[in-house]
Amino acid sequence: MDLYPKLITDALATVRYPGTGKNIVEAGMVEDDLRIAGLHVSFSLVFDKPTDPFLRSIVKAAEAAIHAYVGKEVEVEIRTRTRQAPRPEAGQLLPGVKNIIAVSSGKGGVGKSTVAANLAVSLARMGYRVGLLDADIFGPSMPKMFGEEDARPYAENIGGRDLIVPVEKYGVKMLSIGFFVSPDQATLWRGGMASNALKQLIGDAAWGELDYFVLDTPPGTSDIHLTLVQTLAITGAVIVSTPQEVALADARKGIDMYRNEKVGVPILGLVENMAWFTPAELPENRYYLFGREGVKRLAEEMGVPLLGQIPVVESVCGSGDGGTPVALDDASPVGLAFRQMAARVVTQTDRRNMEMAPTQVVDVKK
Image (cartoon, rainbow, N blue to C red; front, side, top):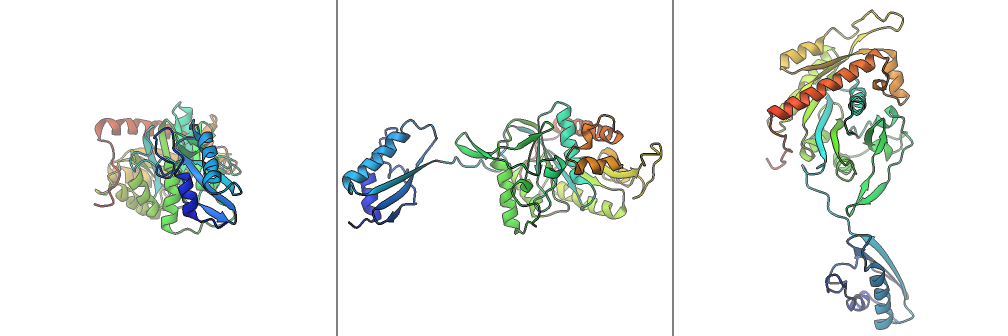
């Protein structure tokens, strides 16, 4: 007996789906993965939801139709899957999220990720529902900062879509590309691949209801930043810099990127990281290793608030490397500085929402 695809699809066209009255071929329930090997036939049937009441009866009816119209000796293998609901459009990806905060820096090495992690933890400790996305695709650091390097997020079918379930720790829901790539290998992706991966972490994840969604963005300005403003309506940006003049020059570029008329993301304020060094044995002393109050002067120049000045102490580095953000330490003056910074972010976000219209996603056509 010679089998060919039309013979099989003609047989399947005799099976009707009770919910619509259409046959399963006409209804698009037969996937385009039909394979014939001798007398062995395999294909997939797709259903709208895993709890479809007719799923088992349709599978049995499809097998019976092939045996009746093609031949009893045919071996039939039928797979089933659930039809994936489409991803919502840009600007509507996170309907349960109230505020989206981008933590950004003009250059690397200024402690942006440390600020983002401690901002998220501080907000969670204040009682807010918080999500944290490690959007630094090429240099993810959040898995280590949260002590979750071995975590492997899984997917659940929610509302007809397979969604990644974020890792939850210290009251923060978190996702990072670092969960899905080897920490020992460089992420060698073109811009389009990185942007698509970022969109998946945003739109194909179960973030749920959040008061604050913190984005740890890559340093500088790049395709990733463009993807973010084209995908999300960012409430406001927090710019991180050290007091050095070279860092301040790059910070200005970061501010300009968000303030650009085509982007239109408000600047909530600036954070001066590594503001001074205080040795543990001399807690009252301050040594200004990178210049003094450069970010404070920049904030005044740009007409934006100074959200905080974070000193350099050994505990900040040790806490980050150990997976316990320093904001968890009530006895640490640095932890207190981060919590005060988070309180100012809340104040500025509330003020921004009262005084300004919601941010719109960037239209690529304009």
